[in-house]
Image 1 (tube, rainbow over the protein chains, first blue to last red):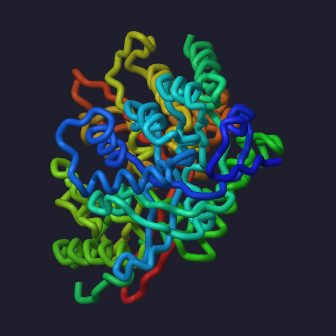
Image 2 (cartoon, each protein chain N blue to C red):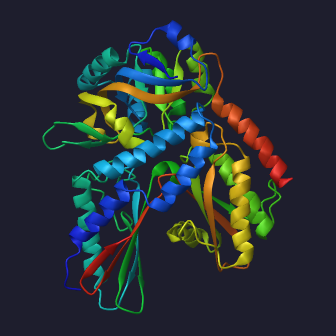
Image 3 (spheres, rainbow over the protein chains, first blue to last red):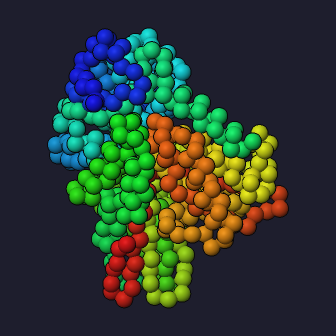
Length: 206
Length: 291
């Protein structure tokens, strides 16, 4: 049976989760991938220059959506671009490891309770999950239509100038299916699987 | 060529992006039954297959990463390839406007997304080859970034893997590539392997091999055996669907070889995600066929 979680998510609910748990996520999530994470890092974590007034406003809006919430590594296909009647057509997860340099800091910056993506992340993020507490939700890569159906509404879009895949889309989701693969207790399913596959590989090529 | 094929090619793109080939779906169903009920791997396979049915019915992209459109074209003498290229680019733009493709062409230096999937001469990727006869054949593969990023090229001999310049060496490095990829290429996936070539032609050949039917056999018995063996052994790694751990990691392996320099021995592995989007369009006389 899948565990149902709603944003804003409480710390005790996060601590109850273990790797291998299947979940259904409901509430508000914000998409963010390579350009978004770099933008957050360059402006709000280790500022490289003075932050523009526009970006300060973007940031304060995003904070409201992300407090105890979810960031989703996703570059969607969106229809209604001309009319701004946005609708998610295809919205599966993208590979998360590219955000490894930034993720733990971004989690802290917004008090995130979950990161949704695919492929898992590294030790820095795992430590970040422990400290927050937060977890990594692995969505099913490529299951783009099924996940798009769980996106009930596009609430807003920020940083549209990054392009459709890279923009930060604020979405309402209902029962988005995922598997916990990194929990708040320092356990990573990815580490477990990799350790085992490496052992087997050595056996096969020895 | 007098006929304007823009709409027909747009339809090829639509089918490729939204309707997974039956032979791929069959492999996915076999994999689904391998995984025990209630496991994360089974949830992944169930979700994948529901998604496949859904996109076929609703005509929406199987995956939001509609990838690099890679066109392999075999054209008869009468075809004006400049005109055909223009039509392919128009069809790509049209399919993007219709949300069958995500705008995916990004200027590497400025980061600007062109918005219509048209970049330079390399985007979309178009491979042209003239053939005898009257039939124009257009094969399209949509290959996403997740699986493209886990592709790998080895220069043999590879000392750490104890891989020499022979088929045993090929086996070793291909298994290493699968292990390195873990679930990041959206497993269970398909492997395209090229032995030889220069670095560029080796990568191209490793992708062209995805045009083979997943069910066919390699005409070279030794390579055929190696294809089977690599698939079996890759599955013993236990990486499983999405890297959740499980029985199916690789659904098929295809190997090709191409001439090389005496000094070089490349083995190139292209990884194709489970969403193995590939369709063919043929045009002969005035008839267009899709398969």
